[in-house]
Image 1 (tube, rainbow, N blue to C red):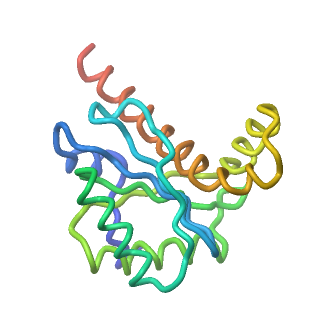
Image 2 (cartoon, rainbow, N blue to C red):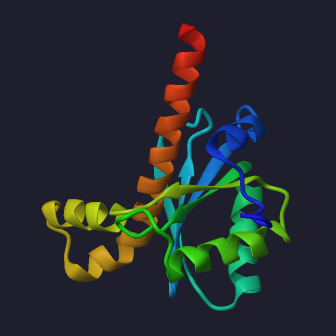
Amino acid sequence: MANDPTYSTEEFEAHLQYGQRVLGMDLGTKTIGLALSDMGRRIASPLETIKRKKFTIDTDRLLELCAQHQVCGLVLGLPLNMDGTEGPRAQATRAFARNLAQRTDIPITYWDERLSTAAVTRTLIEADRSRARRSELVDKMAASYILQGLLDRLQVGATSFFND
């Protein structure tokens, strides 16, 4: 897309700094689920859920967490339709990324989030979590699921680099 400030996975990886973390985001209409990688960028862990208020307030909190945790990259879950096309939610996610990029120099990429919330909800049901507890956890766990997908992809890339 013409004025999309995000990077492909390969470009994103090239911008990451050694020993710093990546933050994953599951962007909803009412909340933003956040997850954080470890310093080695191998494991994603749920961080927190931001209750959405206004863009500036939401991103102030997001950028505060980025500074606090030494974040060098942001991964936004991109909610594609099951056939791979983009609907209104994907367009809203792209608009969020464009606006966020105006407030920070931290590189941003997307990760296909299809079925992430369903997978996390199924896991929470299997863990016998109550409906109230599931709604409290699902957003940040979905962000963790999204982030883990990207981290696994980065590890595959690193492994093939060292095996060549």
